[in-house]
Image 1 (cartoon, helix red, strand yellow):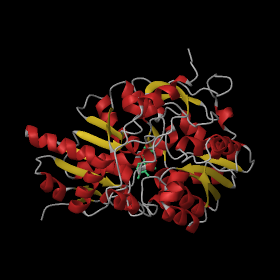
Image 2: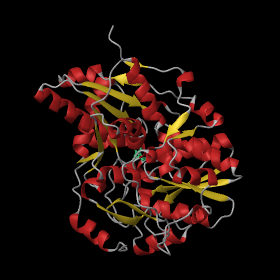
Image 3: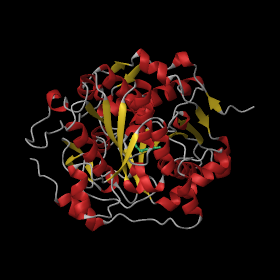
Image 4: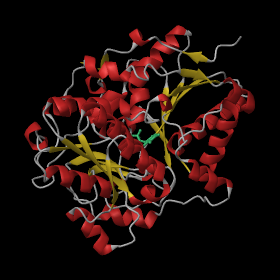
Length: 451
Ligand SMILES: Cc1ncc(COP(=O)(O)O)c(C=O)c1O
């Protein structure tokens, strides 16, 4: 019988996260304070983050220990399986070997608990009582609600309004774990009220929801903020994905030629690829591909420059690919990919040619997701389906060129709470929004110019 799953035992769970900043040829430029435009120091971040996470954010140590309590919670679903997609390969008639690391086995259904668990842990250690956070598709909010529930913290989740309306089951999931969910933009913060005054029908965006959550945390003494992507410590926590995958490839004596991940803020892509990029930086031949939506083409159409992480300009300015902090992407179903910018680490690695980027429209993405579901069974999250589409394209190219490449992609989540998106697609209600050049140019014009 052909081998389908590569499994690790619990005792093989990585004991340390991998910090790519110790090996990058060029480090990202430092984040800048939004008011003074001077580099932010640990003290500036203390109002919203616990010190342990701030230390991780700025650390250049290659390996960072995973606390025992975090490992115990990881063990609820980790190590996650890596599958060989035999049936998809057959459906495509490709000579490529396709593997996927499946992060949908976590209780929240995505890779996000890999970082929500340690973030809740470090906040609890620091005596914090409540977390304020944002969520796009609802995956991060549910991961944070799960983690806060485990550590006895309260959580308020600002959920992008378009997803709040499209995905009621996500809200129920968060509430089941004890979270409070507020549709964003909301009337509870200054940032939300300002947006609503300008546009009462605003669909919301991740940038707006981040502004609301940061304001909530900064104005309540017992509350900290938690971010589900973008920041260095978040990508650090996600490296368990790639570290496990490397062990799994060792077992079967293979190694990927191409590593693929969808890219919203960059955390699942960083998570799956950084441990492999370590080898690339040290001379190994390997391609890493970031996949984003055509309607929010940050890496493929954005500019590499300083911008705010949120819409209201409350967060530090980060050096990253951006479409402009008030760029409002259309309400596509891959809500988790509707972010105006990207992680500074991913951005710098793209800039330096270590990561490539590609953008796809949603109809091709859903076609690929359905082919994957029909072949492999699992219905992918609409975000993860972007990685599926790219994998299929690369596998078809292998067929055309007669090449037997090994492809790994990260199936960052399942789509069982996103079935409305599939139903809309099957009923022909989904179209390909092109990016709007003028809107992007307009948003970029408003960015601060930093010499
Ligand atoms: C399943 C899934 N994959 C990917 C993403 C994109 O985020 P990131 O780029 O941080 O992995 C999200 C975001 O919500 C998600 O829910």
